[in-house]
Length: 362
Image (cartoon, rainbow, N blue to C red):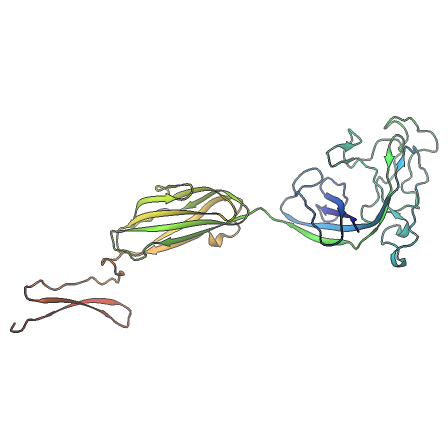
């Protein structure tokens, strides 16, 4: 059976007044079972809640009834009195008035369409009219005792001008009293985090041990791991000493060789962009080339994957790794047979060794 839900998101975690401008009240009707309520992240006057942790009060209203009073001018005794005669299990609700509990709110409010009821007034201030109740609203969580005089208003006689705001408090307006049997109250934290986009940077190199003087290509990939889309993404990949820039090709954005800035731009959640950076390896000294994410919106909360590096070490023997041992060759003499034998010793160093074989009779 459908029921009315009442959710109040409190800015300070103490005051759960649903009409408070800095709080947010969400009300509606939902059926039984798991339900979802959408919230735009704003308070009652349209200001976004800042990043932080807040407390949410949630409850369902069972058997909700309303008792409106129309143009009653005066109610000096309070009331009407509402009494629940057959509470579930014989237990009156845990509200201020028990089985005589009720609610009212005689303050100006704003409708969903943005209209302020009691034009010219400020939301949360008491409605216009003479001699309003001393307490302008019942406690929004625990209510009030309808058999008390808490909501008494107006005067003993007169006050009927039939002109809004000029007569007694109840003149020319409708005033509502309502009651319900509340469900168990749920208090739960609400955590608002900043939007984020995790940009992961990876890098590979076409040949980590090329011949000195030849070209290699670094491939840099920037991937948006989400959860949000990103804009203004930039990765910096300057060409270090020991390498000479040859060319760059980006699947998205532009690369400036002088600064090493790869200006990618927007990356939606799950998208990737690649940069292929071709350089010449000048010598045999190991060179580390690093690409780093340097800009992007929103915030990237995972700096651990913001950069990646590859190392290249030039070799003096094309096709062989740089071992630090210069290759040798024997003299070229007619009738001599040159041989080249590679011997690998236990130290893991490959040594080029040349030897010769004499001809018979020499």
